[in-house]
Amino acid sequence: MKEAEYIRRAEVLKVRLYRTARLYLGGEHAALDAVDEAVYKGLLACGKLREPAYFDTWLTRILINVCNSELRRRKRERAMEELPETAVEAFDALPLREAVERLPRELRAVIVLRYFSGYTLAETARALELPAGTVSTRQRRALELLRLELSEQEV
Amino acid sequence: MDRRQEYEAILRELEETPPALEYTVQRSLARRRRRRWGRRLGIPAASLAGVFTAFVVLVNTSMPFAMACSGVPGLRELMAAVALSPSLKAAVEHDYAQYIGQSQTDNGITLRLEYLILDQGQISFFMEAEGPYESYLVKAKCLDGAGKELQGGLGISSVSFAGDTLANAVSLVADDSFQFPEEMRMECRVEGQRQTDGIAPETAPGTESADGEEPEATFVFTFPMDTQSLNDCRSLPVGDWVEVDGQRLRFGLDSYPTHGRLTVEEHPDNTARLAGMDFYLEDETGRRYEDNPAGSVGAIGSRRMCDTIYFSDPAHLTLSVTRLEWLDQGRERVTVNLETGAVEGVLPEGMEIYTHRISDRIAEIAVLAEQEESDYYGLLGTDYWREPGEERSIRRYSYRWKQSLWSGTSDETVIPDGWFAQLLTLEDYPWSTVELDLQFTQRHTLEEPMEVTLW
Image (cartoon, rainbow over all chains, first blue to last red; front, top):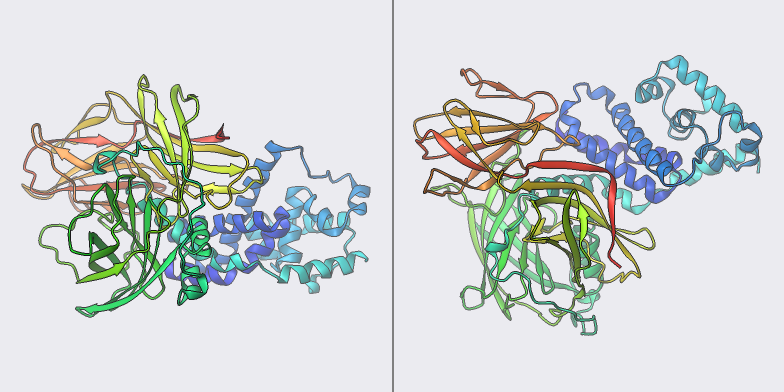
């Protein structure tokens, strides 16, 4: 992809990237830093993107990787914040935003992309490099933990 | 509030985005430009007349510019131009900007010198350009109002800019002996540039053009300078020696209104010289001050540029080093046989050299290495190349990737995916061997930053 096209499409996607990072990392500054880092990495690598149709999921995948790096860094600094999937009652007791932020990372990525950033199931699968069936399973499990009843039409 | 209402509230909240998101893409473009040019613009101490030995401790008690922000025309454009630099932004907010507002046209190019922001160590010039090119590079020479050379050491760097928006096109960095004139005469040679794909500009800003290459347009601006704020600086003397990678370093910090300078002193018994360092500073609130800030050079001798703490004045400050480059003593140079590509001396691990002779008098050398974070970095020193008893400056080099070099010849060299090449062209060079300076002999990114408490 040419740099000029990358700049144009990154400008369009940045709000969606921010929403994803905002819920995934749980803070405005951290989200901005992550979007900056992802857009920078994308800028350096855009020449290698051969299929512009996959731009959105490609840059989202970069963002998710950046967010995961940040979460790994945080984990080294302080105790693990994620709750296990078995902690159903604990999820129940938390406000929704906090519950999302404390989902296991693989469930959180799916739920954030699907229900808060507006990606389709196929786009989510592509961004996370997962089979669609796995995304579907994780989505169902995350919604159960969050006690959130949302239909496909609401995405 | 039930789960459904919470969900809808979060969606509404996510509709609001912070203003800083507006400049995400511009920040990325500026960051890439800094990475490309910043390191190569490190100005050797020898090129400055003084070596920053004077120790300046002046608290910010002097009056800043009398000019109030409301008196600076077009402040909105200036604020947008400094949005990527926390230091320059703070300097503008504290009235360190001076409006120039001069415009000239030559050879189809109009150059507008709009503002400068200055302190004792740096002047940042903000310009716009209009003409037939996609970007512009302004090579500037600064004199006093009468046209005499300025006294004291200074270096001038330039950054290619798009022209249609205000940009920090030229920066002047000065040592403590530099005498700021009351009136400055700035001679500008402007070159137009067209976009290339996958190939970085061939010459770094600040290096001379090849012989016979004419600038697209020339301009001379003369303007007064308000020098009331020149003594504003907060300084932290160098601390104790710290062992890093088996070498000893100690650090000090000077904070000017527009930039910071981290002094890195190296112990005389060290077996390797510090060739490069990435770092950031962090205060007690978690606020970070980055190295190599927008609109500035990477280093001046032993001083490495960073964002300033001048206005935030933190209670505690920690230095975090994230990447180091060392140059082992006795391994600084290699000799390359231009006919065979054979190397005398030890190349750093992971670095490969290839050669190709274009004609009897022109040869090319390509140094290949793996990219880091999808980016390239300096491998060989570009200041000098030499036949025994002779020393010259390399005037042309470039960085390349995703292509073959010297296609269709017996020297064809493929740059592997994820690698890059630094390509040097030796002009008027009929000899078979050349000596080259290595940029580093060891280079590594620290998985965990090394932290040093500055205070």
